[in-house]
Picture (cartoon, rainbow, N blue to C red):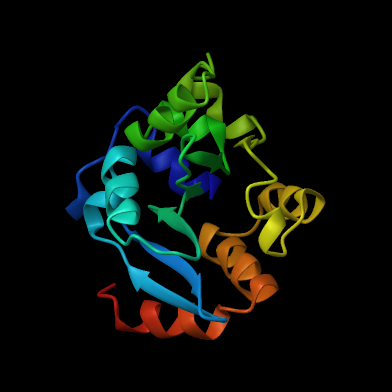
Length: 179
């Protein structure tokens, strides 16, 4: 991921058509998992991603997974008391508005890092590592997944999907997305 980041330093790339990756809504209802693609705009705006998830109006567990530009991921889980969030790489806030939005929602300042030093800094996650605990991914497991910085975000999200048992459903949706 460091090589990809080096090419993008200093250039915020937040138009949906410029980003690679994916966003999906994951719902557990009636004893089974359902995965639905979110619009590309969900990769550029936390508020858009939240609106799309809330529009699903599920009676079961609902959360979103965003792989933004193959650089980092966001897990978001709307709740009546506010959306619970996890950002896999806080340093991504230097290059991506959605990552900065997540940190702002978490009341965490964007890291004060010189862009020239970014490749030498190990990324770190921020947010609620227990947001999927009730579904079967306890905090220690999510901590390990986010710390696997040599993996791409889609691989990390696939680990979450496998742990929860919706990896087949996720693969089915991703296979249909344009790439």
